[in-house]
Length: 132
Image (cartoon, rainbow, N blue to C red; front, side, top):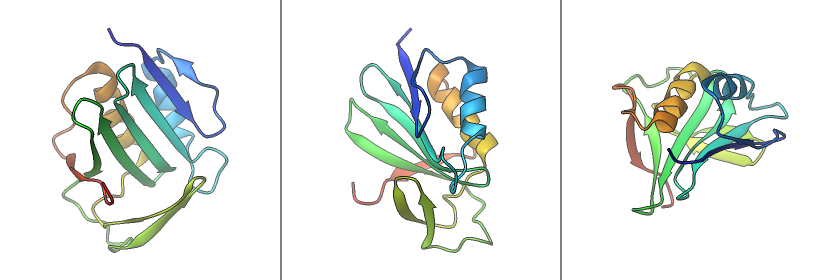
């Protein structure tokens, strides 16, 4: 099994985090709070990361073997956040498409799939991250 590291804004780094620790950390994120982003990285440098929190999360993944960075999206665009709406969080701001907004529980599932090297939920798809 590959070594994993869970890191985040104002969180102590966790090596080999449990499912419960991942759930707790992702659910504690809040765009306007002191914890507004986190990442789960494996030893080869591949990772999944989240910015935002609660009902306003954005997820990206990076594959170290291919050098590809991708953003998650789904088939239910947000009626509240049209394309171009800014996600403002502790590391800055990102313009998102209406189908790139996720709730924290969906992010937890994505992180756990990455941790366990299992397929992502069927509703989650990936496209090249802007600027990469």
